[in-house]
Image (cartoon, rainbow, N blue to C red):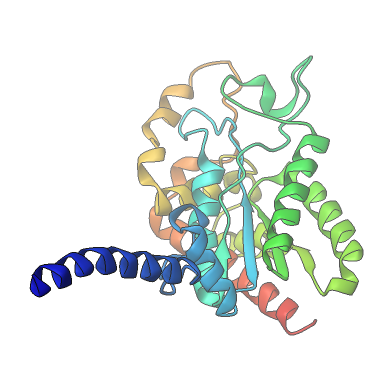
Amino acid sequence: MFRLTLFRLALLVIPLCAVIVVRARSNEPLTSELSKTVEFRDLTWVEVRTALREGYKTVLVPTGGIEQNGPHMILGKHDYIVGWAADRIAIKVGRTLVAPVISYVPEGDFSPPTGHMRFPGTLGVSDSAFAGVLEGTARSLKAHGFTLICFMGDHGQSQAVQREVAERLSKEWRDANVRVAHIDAYYDDRAQVKRLEAEGETAASIGQHASIIDTSELLAVHPSGVDLGKVAKAGGVSEQPGSSGDPTRSSAERGRSLISMRIEAAAAQIEALRAGK
């Protein structure tokens, strides 16, 4: 009888202890190891919090664009290039995470269409809409504890808007020691043009859009997005192809060299910002 009573008592006590343990554990914060991944899209919120606690207070906000890039290159060129570069810049400077690429950027007027909006597939937004997305993204990142927020664009029409938003928010958050920076060194292609000219290219052959530079860069980071055979097929038509220069002179080897120049320049600018320059 005594053994039976003890057995019944154990049946009551064991579940009670389990409840106490569960309740005790529920008061403990969630934890995670520091992830080797730098991209937000591949992290949990707990991993982002861990990174912040480990000093990852810098974040890159890459902006791309969905636009025509001639008959030989896919619409998502900018997204692929800037996303690939952002990851490598983050790793190079250290203690930096990368927000998802912002694809929707200014591309021209809608009615009548101007700029890249003249070509089917291009997706554009107004300057004010783009500025609103940048501001909302920056305010989100500040709320989470990031103190250096870097806009980095692969598209020409994005540059002025990024600069304006960065300057305005940095001024607003000066007392909070939170800075928003426009990483213009990434987009500046003067050094790339100079290198190509040293290799025998001319301004005409280099071009300005869907040209040697960006075609080579996409060949380096996403080769399936380029089909140079389509350039020759478009050569005999009267329609504007949407590209300039001679993209057939592009190569993945050139692309690796050219994009590495962007990475080095952007990394240097970010390191200078961290040093207070």
